[in-house]
Every structure is written in C-alpha cells, then in structure tokens.
Amino acid sequence: MTAMARHAARHSRTPLLLAGAAVVVIATVVAVVVATRHSGPPHPAAATGTTGTGTGSGSHHTSSSTTSSAPITSTTTTGLPAPGPGFVPGKVTVIGDSVVLDYQDPLKTDIPGIDVEAAVSRQWGTGETLLQQLKGSDELGAQVIVALSTNGPIATADFDAMMTILQGASRVEFVNVHVDRPWQDPNNAVLAAGAARYKNVVIADWNALADQHPEWFGADGTHLAIDGAGAAALASLVTSTLSGG
Image 1 (cartoon, rainbow, N blue to C red):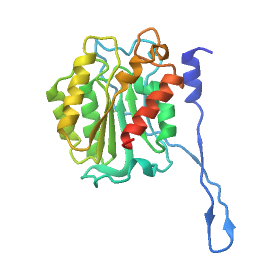
Image 2 (tube, helix red, strand yellow):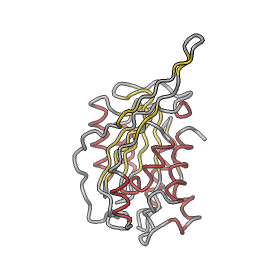
Image 3 (cartoon, rainbow, N blue to C red):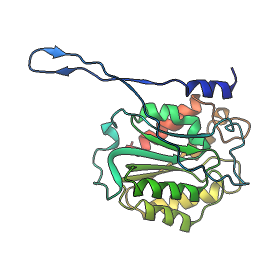
C-alpha cells in the first residue's frame, strides 16, 4: 500500500475511547463508555509559499484539526502558572506545518487530548493568525506547541509578535527545524535567542536529534515516514520537553 493510501486509510477510522472503572463504597461498578472522537471544522486554509517544503515526501498530507476527548495527562500540567484570558487550562494545542502531520499520531498517544492544528506549507504568519483566532474564541490550550519555520525564514520581530499573541500561556514550546534550506540555522538561532528572553518558553531541539539519524528521512531530508521511528522519536521529544523532562 502506498504512503498516500495508508495515510488516508488511517484517518478514515474513528477511534474509540474506553472509560475506566469507578469504585463506589464496597461494590465495584464498571461502566464502559464508547465515544466518537470529534473532529472540529477546519480552520481557514494556510497560505502556500513558493519557498515552502510541503511538496516533498510529505506532500500526501493536506491538513489536520483534531482534538481527542481523552483528558490531558498530569505530567504536562504540574507546577505551571495559571493561564490568562483566552487560554484553556489543562489543554495542549500544537500549531504546525506538514512535518507535524508526519508525527501527529504518536503525539496524540503521548499527549491525550492534544488539539493538532497542522497544514502543508503553513507559514509563520499564518500560524500567528490561527493562534489569534483560537485565543479570541477561548479555544487555545494553556500549553502551546509551535512547530513552524520549516517553510521560510523568520526574524526576531516574528518571534516577538508570536509571543505577544501567546502572552498569558502557561507554557510555550517551540520545535526547531531540520530542513535542507538556507534558513535552517538562522531560524533555529532566532528560536533559541527568543526562548532565552521569555519566561515559560522552552525549545525542543529537533535539529540536533535529527542530525544523528539521517535514516529517518525521505528524499527531501525534512519529512518523516508516518508512524516510523523518526515520527515516534520526534513525538517523544516534544512531549518530554513540554513536561520539563
């Protein structure tokens, strides 16, 4: 089966959620609740830049906007400051490009309840607009993962503009990029310098880990095999960084 066909087949299935048993006084009553995971309406389509990398091995993707109904794990919420207006306590939102689509399934397993907002060739500015929309409608998680800057260069002013929108978040995690383009190192430098200037901001150093494993990547050197070893490793890195591990 081709990667495109397998990807389409995976997302045609409706996962089920099994609620656990509750103990009442002496008797144990086991209730099994089967619920259908709700996929919200898609957000406005992302702009596609001429310098984007979304036409590489991940071009079979389109977009994803899904939220699991499972509760957020306590490992991602312990010890964090209370969020400001517009942020949902206990919720995690990831804003990303096509690379996020490569590892969204293991990420949803690692962080139950995460809201994945990802699209091919998404630009940094489009991510800002989406974050502002989610915050304005009180749908943005108190913990935000920003996995952008694969598709074009960013500057310090772009980072600061993003953080202005995210003011009040309990934690913000930026995932740096591994991409065979001249903006890789400058973008990662902007992210690192920006994180050093803001409280509750952390960096998931994907580029450093990716450099050690060229076998994880397709022909473009950027995208990962869906549910492959690289996807699992990136999901684990993002999860552990968010929880402070």
